[in-house]
Amino acid sequence: MIPVNILESYKPVLKTFVKDDIIFNETESARFYYQVKKGTVKMFNLNQDGKEFVQGFFKDGQSFGEPPLFGDFNYPASAICLSDSDIYILPKETLIELFKTHSEIHLNFTKLLCNRMLYKSKIIQEVSIHPPEHRILTLLNHLKTTNGNKGLFEITLTRQQISDLTGLRVETVIRAIKQLEKIGKLTLKRHKVYI
Image (tube, rainbow, N blue to C red):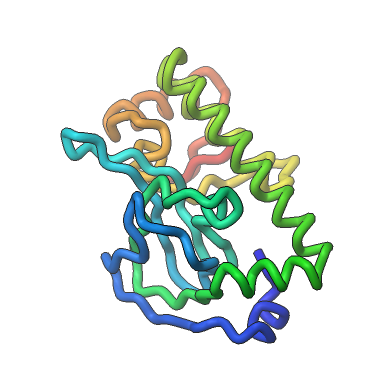
């Protein structure tokens, strides 16, 4: 999110995490900005029965866990590395200084947070009232729109990741994707999903 040359000029810590390392836990105090240099991070919640609901996946160049930095509340979800990862860590106070100096980055950041809020709003509605096919199509269309793609767009999420993001079982996702292909709402090529 923040261009690396600018981020590095503020002297962040570059920390190496291994797969399955917890970066922070739900309800912990938010004190740092995190940006993935290399790797994959998952933010998630666990319910009382141990069922996981994924808030999002974050890869190279993406940041995560920012809203609590601005709202002064604790992390609403936990973050874990899905692969060995190098992550920039910048104290909250330094991030605020960076934003004061670089208004264009602050504006882009605000747009990013608004897009994430839109996504959350869509998913809440989908999970509460719509059938699986509609939930999946909303997620995939959101990914396509967010990436600014107007043509055929390859979905890089696995069936498991789609399951985690929609609250559906993997088997349900597989059936729903086949149904969506059958009615022409998406395309399957070599087990990859395109929309």
